Structure formats: C-alpha cells, structure tokens
Length: 218
Ligand code: DX5
Ligand code: ZN
Image 1 (cartoon, rainbow, N blue to C red):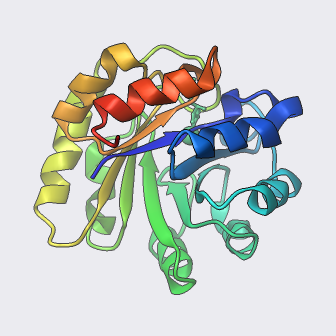
Image 2 (image 1 turned 60 degrees about the vertical axis):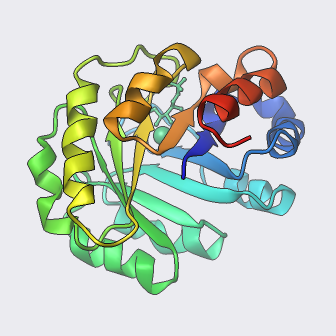
C-alpha cells in the first residue's frame, strides 16, 4: 500500500486551514508535519500551538517528523496533542531505542530517519523495533531543494533490510519528490511519499490527483 504525505511546510500558513481541507477532500489520508528547532537543522518551522490547531481542524493521520535535537524531550507532548506517527532522527537522539519504545508505548507508530550522509547501517540496531524508516532524499531543514541522486541506492538498501523482517515496516522518502521522479523511487521500494512543493505550489487538488494516480491510490 502506498501513501502520499503532503508536507505542510510548503503550505501558505495564512491559508493553512483551507489548504488542509482541500488536501483532505482530494483523497489524502496523511499529513507530514515538519518540526524544526534551529539546532538540529538551521531553520525553525513551527511547534505545538500550530500542531494543536491542525488537529482541531483535521482528521488526517499526523506523521510528525522531528528535526529536533534530543527529540525525546518533546515526543510525549506531540503524542498528547494527537500525533499518530512520530519519527526521530538517528543522528539527533542519544537514546534511540528508549525513545522509539516511548513512542510505541503510547500506541503511536515510531519512525527512524536518516540524513543523506548517514550510513544505512546505523539503523540495523533498530530495524526489529521501528514501524517506519525515513530516508531523507535532501539535506533536512528546508523545502524546495533538489533531490539527491544517490538516494535511490539507499532506498533499495533499506527496502532490502525491511523485506527481511516479518512486521509491517514502511519506507518513507522526503525531499525533492515530484511527479517526474516518483516512479523510480517507488520502484526502489519507497511506499510513503512526502511531497511539499509538488503538492502546495499551484493547483493543490490537481497536484494531488497526479500523485494519487501514480501511487495507485485512486
Ligand atoms: C525537509 C522536510 C521536508 C520538506 C519537503 O527538511 O523534512 O518534509 O517539507 O519539501 P519538498 O517536497 O518541497 O522538498
Ligand atoms: Zn519532513
């Protein structure tokens, strides 16, 4: 099963409620929520107050991507506010296993993310725990960047690791994904597709229709 997870980082924040409504009506089931702290990544996005409002407005699955140093400090608060999945970076967390367990203990899906320069082998200790692996296809921190070409081999490697497990583990990709490079990523094994600019720039409804068609969702 494939999923599209539009990243609201690329939304017009003055029109956030309206745009989320369009996304939901267009048949999307999941929203990607990028939390940036200005420490783990250079930029700051938004935090709990915005997420609280999003939850009030929408029933979509909230896929929270924590680009935050020591995310264990904030995970429980996002879960309390209604996160359905929380992904932490292997590079950002001193106690990855404990934090993944904390997320799952609350009945929420736990993901682990890898920056482009991080060896794939870093996730080996966690592959039998996680519900999702997020392979970053750009350097995290900003929307609208170009897809890093070396990502395909990394996705294939992670797909190989996931296929060796009996549990349902998803493989998410994030950054620089457009309709014209989607297929090769699907073929490499990605099944949760984050797209910011490609969804929110221009006609949102039409953009989503294009993605859902290629993803065989509608
Ligand atoms: C980047 C974020 C992404 C970003 C993707 O650090 O994690 O989720 O919003 O944006 P696009 O699709 O525009 O590259
Ligand atoms: Zn993200």
